[in-house]
Image (cartoon, rainbow, N blue to C red; front, side):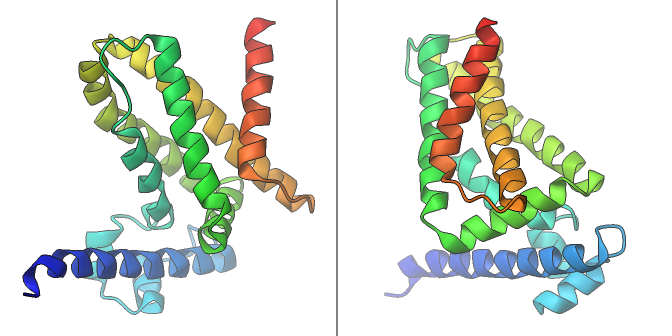
Length: 203
């Protein structure tokens, strides 16, 4: 009777452990910097073995990006047969907007994202990891979207690149404004960035 629920329990525990690793990495990076922090220190603070750390996080830099998968998983199903590039762009933007709305409604995840974005602004190693992860994620979902829609890869990459830029700019500006003592809804800021980039593209 318990077999069907077992995978769900394992997945939940795996995510909980990944979150503990993420929190430990964030604490140490804020205290000592990325270069001054070791994998062993992160694992010890999270209460896991180095082997478990590498299995769930990969590298110490990757450890803080545990929440990024929420966006990749949401984007993976985007696209319908016959979608043109404008429709596809709107669909991707809509996915990002929904995920930002969920993030706004989750104080714990929101705070975690904010800490990561603030660290990225001061730690080149984390910026490099963020860029690498974005490219790798695109390579995972773009072929599937191109196949479903019947659009060339370049169309999908262009739509993903534009909406990804809007997303990155939103998160970076959110962190900058927070440092100035300003509080903003991520959804509203995302809309503002979309309008500004649209105006810049028309200039």
